[in-house]
Image (cartoon, rainbow, N blue to C red; front, side):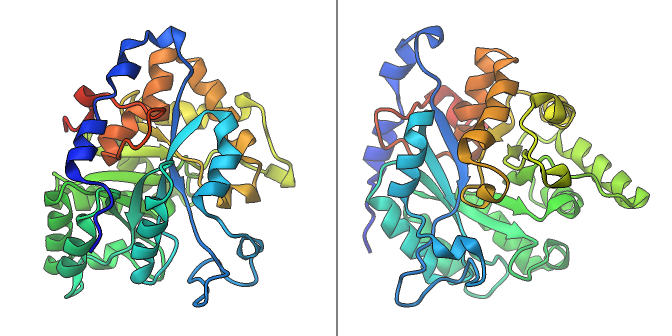
Length: 325
């Protein structure tokens, strides 16, 4: 098996001393995007996702495409998140990512609790770019249904023991499950995908959602991925920060400056607006919080959340912030 990035190279790249030596006010703001998808419908086997009747299916999304789109915007690295139910697509993403240094991590697709989970985890964890898995309410799975199973909890403990993380997906209903999961596996790092959520309309569901969000804000290994900001009320894209401020303020107040991370959800985000539009709202919001808050949101916090791999001189890395919790 190939291990394209040696552990020695990984650790050596992590120092980022030249970057750290430059005063913050004198350097451009680098951005690590912690949520994009990658797929190629032209492969002989096709793709597990997106479906053929989706406009997304008409595009081949590979690192070079993403690099060309985002380099002018200051994006220097990205974490690819799984977009396939097929086991071997974990290997496909890793093989493709090896060839382009803009990819600094990959969140794969494995099922804790399955008899072969440990075998597959051992296989992919040998790759430094493999940073964790995604689970929740996706591909017909249910985190609530899995939590009572000892073998599932054991799988999550193995994930944490390997120094890997979980991306939790599923909207508001996933939050109470993440509370229960982190009760059982407090050492697990969890990134909640695609915040801010729309609050449930049912009063009981809304109360459970708010309570869980507040509780997770108290847990130092739980991070909020602010990757679902744009809205189209009445089918009209809102691009003014005032429309979004209250939702962003809520996340800021609950998770604080150290546990919010940037993600674009590209190319799915194109359904709502262009990449520059996705980025501009959060740029404007965090610029108002000051340079330190900007750096934390756009790259520093992602180190603690993902322990991603520095592969290029343009990618910052603060060793002292990396793996403290």
